[in-house]
Picture 1 (cartoon, rainbow, N blue to C red):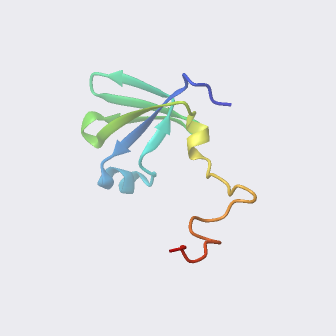
Picture 2 (picture 1 turned 180 degrees about the horizontal axis):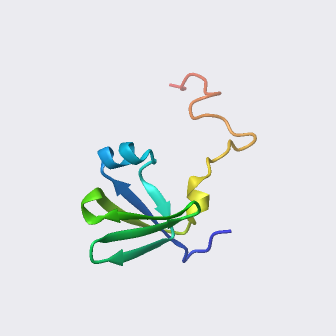
Picture 3 (picture 1 turned 60 degrees about the vertical axis):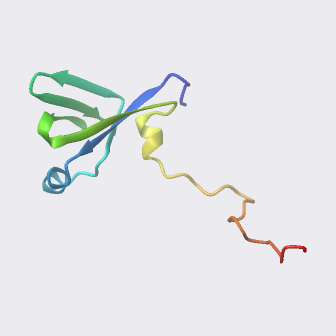
Length: 91
């Protein structure tokens, strides 16, 4: 369960790096270790090192965990898509 102070990060990799490593960008994590030559990104699969030149940007997000971000939102029971069930507007 997420708390209001949970912080996660989205690490956006250069497209050629993501393709070469066969990883989805952005990477979502709740821990980044900064070193002189790059970043260690901690994820459920393990830790990965990326030199500074391979990372385009890092975005900080609050209020959700990395695992919750990765889950696909489900459909809410009883909800209808926008615009459905609407008749003609009254004039």
